[in-house]
Amino acid sequence: MSSPRIEVHEDATALAAAVAGELLLRLVDAQVDGGIPQIALTGGGIAQDVHRELARLGPDSEVDWARVEVWWGDERFVAPDSPERNALDARAAFLSVVGVPDAQVHEMPSTASAGSAEEGAAAYSQAVREHGSGAFEVVMLGVGPDGHVASLFPGHPALEVADRIATAVTDSPKPPPERITLTLGALNRARSVWFLVSGSAKADAVARALGGTGEGGVAADVHDVPAVGVTGQDETIWFLDRASASAL
Image: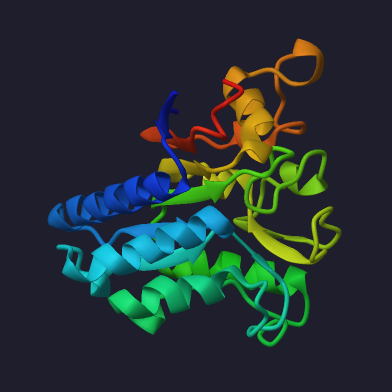
């Protein structure tokens, strides 16, 4: 596992531009080596900024978007047209613009395609087994003010799931209550893990994750700060703006 690298950018705009540019380079490099890169997207405000940068830069890049597979780290188990779906913004703002084929966009199930979050998690696990390459090229993750990543929250039983690729969360402390998330084991099967964090509300969580300490100076545990439980096989990068890095 890799030690984290920290990049601090002036603001959210500069952060999003850096992430988008780096992702395009990684995709090109993977394709030059003959691979079909598989990436996992995240949701949230900074992710939306990244999507818009990718839509701006992606069409003129050297990336062959017909040779990219897209997944998600987590998703809200709601109706497919709900504005709470992470996939809606990604499709409209980025994926449809650059032309990733629909068959290569692997959304997590919604209430229209699965009878329950548990069924949806099982279906997504099977999809990763059938269409995945065994390792994500890049997994992008936001970080909550409580240190959560994907839909893996502090103290939640989903942190203990070790025998599945994806698992259901039916009592999320953050609405909506029903979600599907990749497990820690699945997230850790990534060559590169990128944390995308913006805003002063996240500063304490960033400091706890990167400083390695939790409450009272005790070493941070994944059950208290889930972000410490995800590390890339080759690299881990924290893309921060000045506000989110202010407590480091």
